[in-house]
Amino acid sequence: MLIKRLVSSFVPSSGFSSSGGPRILKTGDILRQTRTFSELDVLEYAKVSYDSNPLHFDSKCAQNAGFEAQIVHGMLVAALFPRIISSHFPGAIYVSQSLNFKLPVYIGDEIVSEVQAINIKESKKRYVTKFATKCFKNGGVLVIDGEAMAVLPTLAVEEASM
Image 1 (cartoon, rainbow, N blue to C red):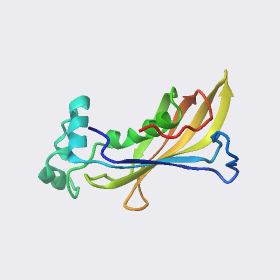
Image 2: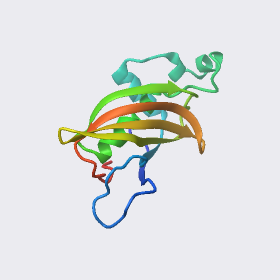
Image 3: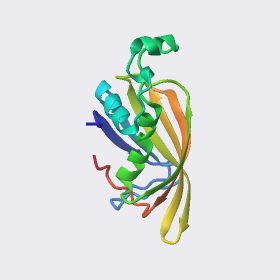
Image 4: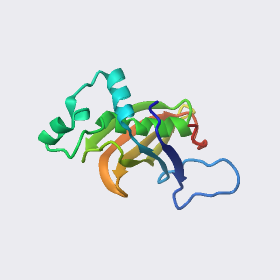
C-alpha cells in the first residue's frame, strides 16, 4: 500500500474568514500533507513506473553515487502535490507541474508537502489556479520546489479524503 502515513492540513491566508460556511480557497492559502515513505512504497512505485534504478534499492550503489543511503524516487515524492489538490478539490484537473529537486529524500524521512494558491482566475465556471509547490524534510529543509497549474471545479475546500 502506497499510503504509509498521511496527515492533511489547511492553512488559510490572513484574509480567511471562518464564519461557519464552506472554506473558500483564496490566494495565499496553503494546503499541506505529511508523509513518510517506506521501502515498500519505493518497491511498489518501481513496479508501476518501471524505474528500477539501483540508487533506489542498493545502499552501496547509492553511497558510491554520493548519497547517504538508497533514495526515494523524486517523482514519487512529487506525486504528493496532485494528491493534495485532488483530495481537497475532487474533480480537479491537474494541468502542469514544474519541479526542481534540491536534495534527496531517504526512506523514513518525514516529508511535509504543501501547495500554496498564488493565482486564481475564473474561466467558464471553473477556476484555473496556479500553486507554488514545495516539499520539506527534517523540519523545514527544502527538497522539492516548483509550480503547478490545476483547473478546479469549485473554490470550496473539502476535508481531505484519505
